[in-house]
Length: 153
Image 1 (cartoon, rainbow, N blue to C red):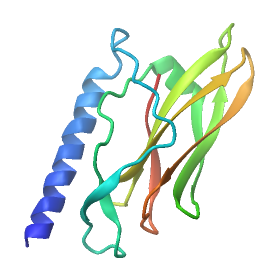
Image 2 (image 1 turned 90 degrees about the horizontal axis):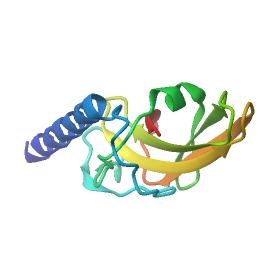
Image 3 (image 1 turned 135 degrees about the vertical axis):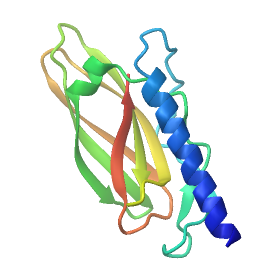
Image 4 (image 1 turned 120 degrees about the vertical axis):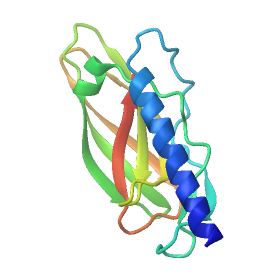
């Protein structure tokens, strides 16, 4: 019973964090996050109904900015397992007149929306060109892991 309560508290905390990001992340005055390339920290409680070792992520980034124009230029094309965790990848289509720098935050979740890993990556795309991006994290992943772009700035 205690483990179930802890899992619910983690889920509520993550939901509150994502709601706060959704309400404040589009502000152009929000400071840019410090790049943390290919990172994750999973050490929360074991998730009920999952393979042993699958836990909720802790230290999930909460200072996620989201630039609507840059977000519209980034697509998620692949979400797949790796030997050590999970990876998301896609394409940036820069329609601007100059080279653009994109800071992409990806959450890896189970089917219930619990964040089990995360990654942040910086990529550049030349003007009027497309560029591939990839973000990977090392963690014990459930078989039903999904990828979500949490923010692009």
